Length: 498
Image 1 (cartoon, rainbow, N blue to C red):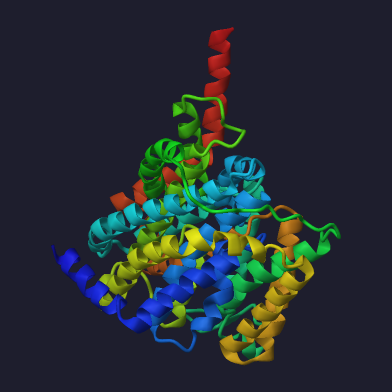
Image 2 (image 1 turned 90 degrees about the vertical axis):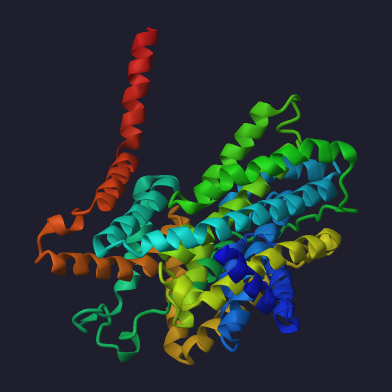
């Protein structure tokens, strides 16, 4: 009941004219950035992060809520129309969405995606309201060794499920952890990896790292592979669903949140796994053989799953301070830029802000549906912008944003140096998310580990002296050993079959 009262207070703050305007601007900007080729919600939030520097925290996070959900829908538009997923979670949408577009049913695919996003986000946000305070209360009793174990789980889980190999995932994580070490030691005050530069003593701003790895790295990669052939835009038409489409879509829309929210709440790589599971489930339950040729269920289910997964990710980020996706990592950077640290005490110390943010999530989902169903043809026209102009604009925007962080030319140099690292990571197949997670969680993980060791006088048993930590380490061991276990089980199955 307390949560309901706090949520109603949050709605009272969120529905003021100024905050409604922030929500609408966030939805439009998020969709506009997310709809461009190769740009997902993480890059949309990273690019627009500097825009909020002059706003108060409440207005900023209301805008970010709109940008977050708008960016997710924008990535789906790109997947459907151009077969170019803005992020890995949108890959599944392209499997059925693009064949629908090629058959002249792009409007129906976009509508199924928009409604799926609405239902998934609505259901996921309701679960966030119901579960987040309970999780936060339980997390208050978690000690330093428990936090370190959970952060280690986040590192291992994210690096294990992303990229073409575990080795590349851990290499990316190592890059992020190294960047996170730059600056002053949090306990001793000693300089680390600053090379005698006073400008680096405060460390590298997370905003600069996120914008560099996502925006600059992607722009350089596209420029290196730019083709002179022009993409032919696909006509969209009127985005309305017929009775047959609705009859085939409503069950996938409802099944999506059941799959998406739990996976979004755990450090398991975000929406990639649940969207594939949703697609597999819809394909198995379908009573026709249209899958692979443009089945609307293959758009409706995964899109609802992805949005619900985003809500689950926010639950973990707000209550534990653990970002499990790239977008959540950038959102965490947004909290930190205002001096706010998500975690168990957030709901006590910043209660008004948190519940206003949650209320704005509901408002953002409604605005997203109302604005983007009729605007779908306009978003399609944005794809006609020549790619050289598009990515030149992104580089300009990224440079202005990086300079605005501290007004120092060193930040611009760091932006492009780290951007070159991001380009190299794409060249050698290293996923970006583990690096971003490493930069943000690395210093916190180090601090919690050292606190736990100080409490135990340097004895390593201090890292595993609680039932919670032992349970988490068991999960870590299972994740690391799972490929070997699966291989052994497969070999025994083959022997018995022979």
